[in-house]
Amino acid sequence: MTALTIIIGGERLEGRILKKMHERIIKNFMDIIILAELRAGPLSGYDVISFIHGRFHLLVSSGTVYSLLYSLERNGLIEGTWNERKRVYKLTDKGEKTIETILNANDKIKNFITGLLKVQAVA
Image (cartoon, rainbow, N blue to C red; front, side, top):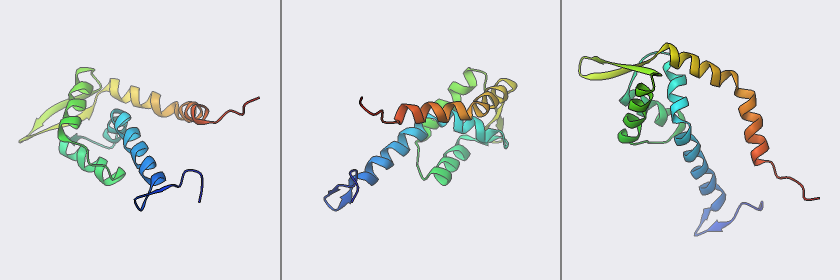
């Protein structure tokens, strides 16, 4: 048993901690996740909810998703248009440039997170 594997009421604490971390990371980076997925084509709010659930096994509320979509639209990163009875969102040029910049900084982001989480030896 590792130091993080503690059994409480029959459930592994490690698993619960990792699940909560997973949820926090997905929710905190959902704007980037949405922008990256919009590179493949337009999506409705329902499509975003389905994508997040299918890819990350996390069910997010429609209020969370639509609030984020409206924010991205207000910032000029995406544009929403009505397609029959649903609003469909696509990347704007500004959104495309933003996601390209983020994806190109991938190594810097990984190094930052690794450095943040790395335990420093006490001298």
